[in-house]
Image (cartoon, rainbow, N blue to C red; front, side, top):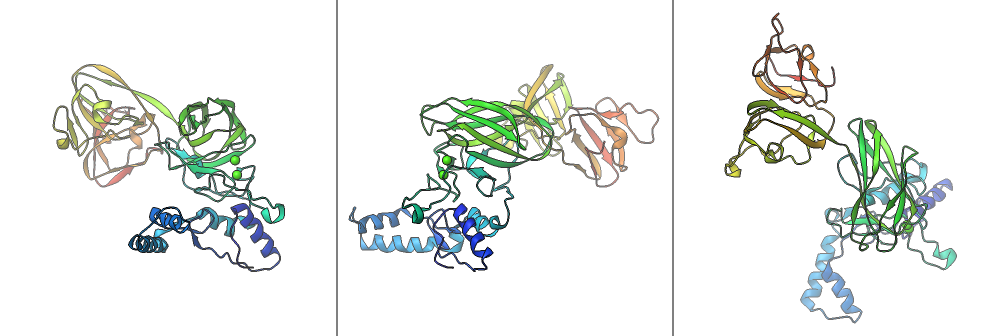
Length: 420
Ligand SMILES: [Ca+2]
Ligand SMILES: [Ca+2]
C-alpha cells in the first residue's frame, strides 16, 4: 500500500494495524512537508508564502525575490533544517502494537509542563479528544482532527500561543470529557501545589485532576480571563506525592478554555538563624530567589568553598552570585536575625570531597550522624567545636540542618547523604 499519509496519528495507527494484520506492506509518501502530519516538518519561509500569494494573484514579487524564496524553501528541506515529528513516528511504528503510553518529553516538579507536551500514545490512553481523524471519504465531510493545526498530529487541538512563558503552543478547543495525560518523575516525597495556566474569553472552565487513576482535586473552577490569549495561573490545590513516576491527568468537565501549562511545585521554607558577625550556614532547598543579596539581605560578606560576594562591590568582581542547595557558606552578617527562605527541595546528590580541607553544607532536611561520614574523615570543625574519629573529647555528634562545616579528609571521597 503506498501513496497515503494525509491524516491524523489515530488514522495512521489504525491503518498500519489493518495493513499489517492482513500481511500488507505500506509506505507513506510525504516524508518532508510543511504540515503537522509528516515525519519531517519543513518550515515555510515568509517570502515563499508571498510567492504563492503572487501566483494566486495577490500582490507581486520580483524575479530575484522569487528565486531567493524558492532557494530558501529548498534549503529548509535539508534534513538538518527539518524538525522531527516524534509523535508521527510513534503512531506509525510503536502504537499499532501497543496501547501503552510514554512521555513525549521529560517532566518533573518545579518546572513548566507545557500542555502541548502530553504523553505519546493512542486516543483514550495518552489523551482523549472528541474529533481525532478525518473520514471524509466515507462521510463526505472533512474534519480537522487538530483544529489549531499546530505542533502535533493527534486529535488534541493545538494552536500557537501568545503566553510569554509558553513553549509557543497551547491546547485549545477543550470540551467536556476530553483529557490529557502527562508522565512526571518526582525527586522527593513532598506536598505539591498544582497550578494550571489557562485563558478563556467565554466561560469559567472546570477541571478534575487525577493522579495514577485517582481523582485528587475534583471539579476545580478556572475563572474566565480577559481573552483567549490572556493567561492566568490557577492554583488548583495541594497533593502529597511520593518520589518516582506518576501519571497526572487533566480531565475537562466544562471546556472552552486554552491551557498553556501545568506545574507541580513543592515550595517549602527553611529558617536560618544568623548572629551578628561570622556564621557557617547551608540550605536543604533551592531558594526561589537565589541571588546572594536576596537570601542574605544584611550580610556584608558571603564566601563559599571557591567564590565570594561582597556587598556594595562592583558586581563583576563577585564570583558568588547564587545560593545553592547543600553548599556551605561563611557569612558575615551585620545584625542578629532569623531568615525564612522559600524554595523547592530536590533529591540530594552526594558531596564529593577532595583530599584536604573542604567547606560543606547539609543538603537534607535532617541531622546527619557524624559517624556516618566516610572513613577518610580526619577532622570536622565549626567555629567552636570539632570532631576527630579517634578522639574521646568530641563535641560534634551530628551535622545539623542549616549549618556548614569544615571537613578534612585523607583522600578524595564522597558523603552519601541518603545512607544515614
Ligand atoms: Ca480534535
Ligand atoms: Ca478538543
